[in-house]
Image 1 (cartoon, one colour):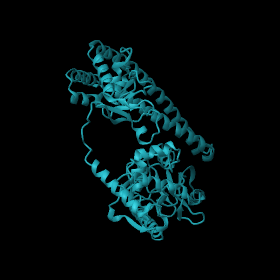
Image 2 (cartoon, rainbow, N blue to C red):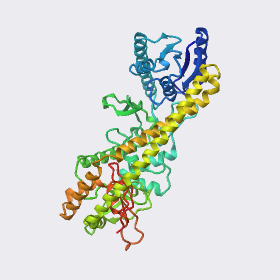
Image 3 (cartoon, rainbow, N blue to C red):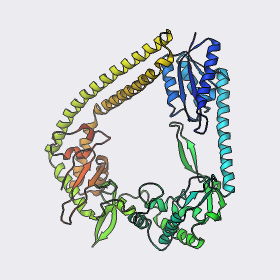
Image 4 (tube, helix red, strand yellow):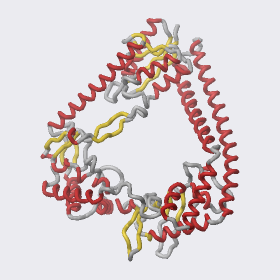
Length: 533
């Protein structure tokens, strides 16, 4: 009598959840007829067969085959396992490698021919389903219904699925946004005003400039959305599945593939106002093209962060010829308490002056070297203990799982009696394996022999660049050694500038440089107490 595992799956939330039970019952009847015993059942509910990623039931079934917990896997049909032309053979090959047969009640015993044919049929099914779905959405579009999500300014009509009507309150906000932009207000100013007045956004906690202006390539954003002029556009963005993760990734379709249809009943913005807005938007985007790839204008560009919300500090013009900086979130949406401007040149003087003082002292670097060695040894012992503990718990869980499977095989217990316990043990095995991998990876990083040499060499080069006032070289080295510099909000006009250096350079700037964290020196960087000036 063969030991059998049953696997069942259904695809959509719209399907009957009893589909799992029905598939299991069908497979059990086949096992009884063939004289086999069922020792385990696995299932995935409301998950597509287009990808094997994200299916915990299938993962557990494969893990059970690796542990030799059963000899045969029975399914209703092979497309329950996978519909992908590449992934179905992959699962079958894995089961066969583990000495486990794959049998479908509808399709028979798996072979190269049956798996190849079923994989091809499954792939064609998915392609045909996608085509029919697009055809149905195109039909909705032809009837003046939206085929995508519901934008701000509209609400669904009760009792008429797929049909929308204008929400008068939200439509007034839409009109205001278009008028303000056409009259010269920036998207940042509009978003800040809406947030200040407490106007509730359609999604999220606050209005943002990007919500209003959107992306030129994708024609997104409120002032780009032609639904407000009574034109529905569909198929702007398609999705393609990433074979490594199983997730669908958006891709912008060529404009020739976009579908457009007139929907005058959904118009909110008059055509004249739409054209004024479009003309100003096109002018603004043409003026900003070509910015990408330009090197930083200042030595700390892109490194400064707001101490109140964590957003970037960006240029905010100048006062009396002095460059100013301000929180980008405060500028974009007005949703940050740190709305004060600060002098960018003073921040740069405080940061670079503090770095010069610290880096010109050889004792600091030598103390960092000693502290690194001590911390390195301590962490190595800690990781070794972590690895040993994870290995012990992993072996204990595996032995307990094997004991339960043997008890079922000998008839001492039933699969139903041990099912919950086996699920707990499988979860424990996954946790300990992940714990063991993390401990091993961190050991590899800590034991890299060139880490300290590379780090100290970069620090010395930065010190030379700062001493020689070589802004370009210093800028490049700063970006190797610093993740960001967090600038605390200033309370009064005479307050000193307080900032915190985050990254590997922070290891040299602690009150006690003899206690340097290895985590602050390894390539991934780290968080350490910073410098106050």
